[in-house]
Length: 232
Image 1: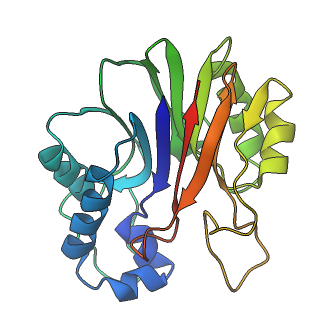
Image 2 (image 1 turned 45 degrees about the horizontal axis):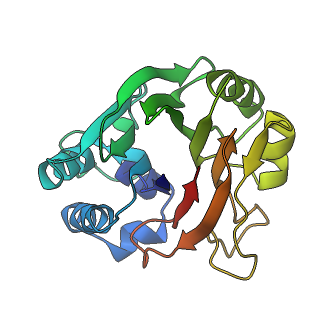
């Protein structure tokens, strides 16, 4: 099974944090089309997306009618703080796009953060878990929940974990394997003004081998690059 994960950056978050992506793409409609084009060009069997706006989700569904969409719509809706939102549907969702048969097993916001969560889908006998983990101490309980959702496996976890691989490995335990990306290759979350880790997006397995892991640059469409791997 080939899998991919990408935090596509919700427009309201981009505006609120004055992201350079917002400046590079003044018209969100253009960026939405670019995100959709990149996703449509992927041949991965499973694609996990984080920070998907309602407008982005609608465009993806329209452009990829042959694929199955599984979604978790968060109770928290991002609020514009700097400029008015360009979005018609401003909700935020976690999304799994699957090529082939699949079924949703669970879709839950984390109990300590209504703006992040986990989406669990069975694909070919494998539990595929898309997630976006909170970037503070709330993540400890979230990691514990992800370990529960991945048990007994086989399972693959895809997402933005807001932590480096060492932190994630310690939290999840020895039963999990984290894909290793080339240290001299592109970062998953490039940064120039902070000491935070630049490798916070991961492909993680339980009971499956990971190979051919790579970070795929996305040419400034989001503040994260896409990550992909083969698992099995």
